[in-house]
Length: 169
Image 1 (tube, rainbow, N blue to C red):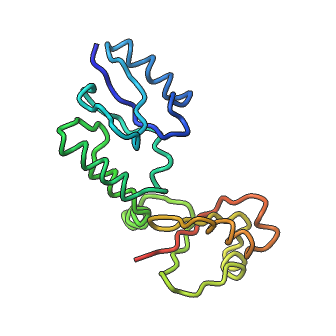
Image 2: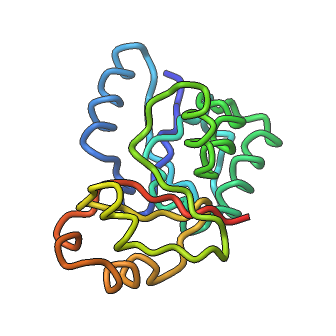
């Protein structure tokens, strides 16, 4: 049976419920799917015939390390079933702007330029939005979302959903 790594994060070292279902399905095709915490030191990648990037949900906290890990997989000749070029491309949230420009529907989005002055309350009112979501283009700084919550109108604090993607260059 060939071993496949399902890359995950430290929060889910034993796989999520969905990944456990996937592992069971892969077993039917003679694959032994095992969890691999992407930033775990001393990984023995030679044990796996392929890696599937699944729930590496903490990559945004260490984007440079994540990119280095993807590059290591490639350099070591490990087959990555998610195309590494796509992984690199969607690490930078500007890919959403590129998708929108090509006609793909994305959530309503306001792009703020780095260093620009935006007025959150006015932006929400102008767009009739009550459920904003803020995200940095590449990496969120610690406390940024809580800072945003302090500045937004009380009616918005209950449920953050609509997307704002401030652009950092």
